[in-house]
Length: 231
Image (cartoon, rainbow, N blue to C red):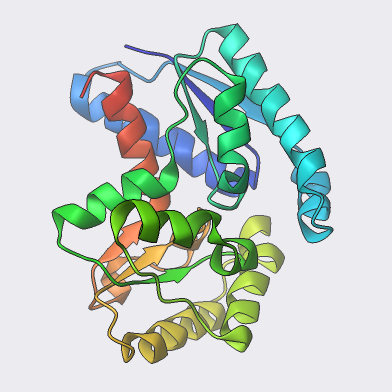
C-alpha cells in the first residue's frame, strides 16, 4: 500500500470527508481492520481564504509548495490537493515535488467519460467557475464543455460555500437555491452535474437530481485509493 499525502484544511469540513472516504474505500477493498496509510498537512483556512479573496496567488503558491515538500519528505508516495479551487496552483505544486499529484479535474473527467457525459453543469467557487484552470482543463484535455451559472448564480453558489458549508452550516433553503440553479441551467443542454467544490456534497447528492451527478470529493478519494492499492 502506497502512502498518500493530503493537503487539506481548505476547508477542514471537506478534508474530514476525504479522510473518511479514503479509509472506507480502503477497508472495502482490503477488509477487516485495514485502513489507509495517510499523511496530512491541514492549513488554517482563514488566512488562505483571505489570500484567495485578495488574488494573492503567489503567496498561496509558496505555502502550498512548502506543504507538498513537507509531505513528500515525510514519505508520501503521491499527493492530493483536497480542494478544487487550490488546483489553480497545481502546476506549481507538481513541479516542486518528484511524486505525482493526482489532479481532481482529470479523475473527474475520467469518471464522466465512463458514463458518456460531456456537457456538465459545474457548481463551484467563483475562482473555479470564472478562471480557466479548471473548466479550461476539462475542455482542452478532455473535450468536456462546462456550463456555469450567470453572475448572480455564481455569487449565490460561491457565498453559500464560504459563508455556510465551509463553516459546517447546511441549510434547507440553500439546498433549494442550488437545486433551482441546476434546474435553470439544465435547460441549456446539460447532461450532468459536477460538484466542483469539495464541500457541496454536504448539501446535495444524486438522490436530489435526475441528471447524473459527479461528486469530485468522492471521485478524487476513490482515485487516490486506486492509486495507493495499485489499481
